[in-house]
Length: 98
Image 1 (cartoon, rainbow, N blue to C red):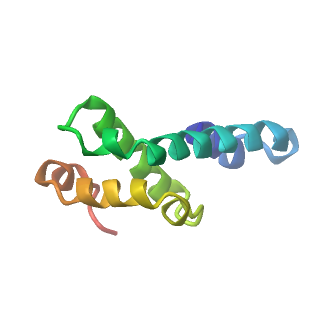
Image 2 (cartoon, one colour; image 1 turned 180 degrees about the vertical axis):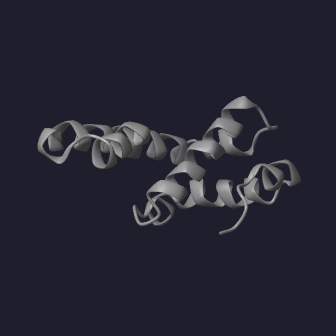
């Protein structure tokens, strides 16, 4: 959903943008983050592909929508993401600092 929001706000010509569509996708992204935030036990189990995918999604949120405020709204998700960012394998996959 965040990728579609990015496309709608940056690629689609301004006269063709559809706010209701974009708002719907933002709501989907927020609902997904809320669901993961509520399922803290999933975030603390042994590492699996869902946690890696979630780490990528949250990294994308930080990269493209740094001011969206997801960390403040979802503190358990933020704690999970901070913990994942400490993993050597994740550190190696981060883009170089600008």
